[in-house]
Length: 124
Image (cartoon, rainbow, N blue to C red; front, side):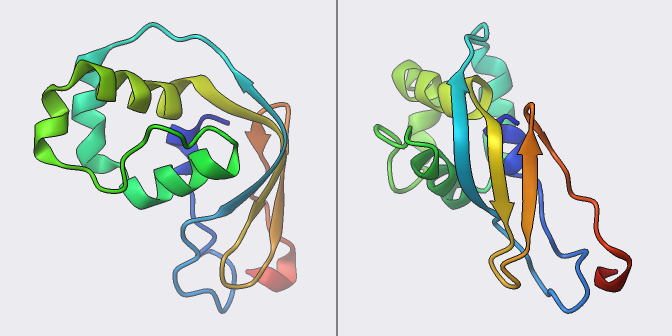
């Protein structure tokens, strides 16, 4: 699961959970897989990404170094910054682990890079 995918996942589908975002990551296996750098894609995606959730997820995976605390407009022209964001969004992949709902503590397994967000009947 790429951190780009993680940035859009929520557990608000669980009965009684209001927000369910951002999901915590308990990584068991993380890999960095090289993906061609596309600065245009990154600059178009950044406004859609929750920066604080991305920063938290990257840290949980052990790759948060170099990401600034705040996203500033002038950084959109900085190629080094865009490469760091590209690495966080596109190249860091959680292969095995768990996603954790911040409200309920419900864990969702990640296996072979795919998060299983299926719920039990009593959770819907």
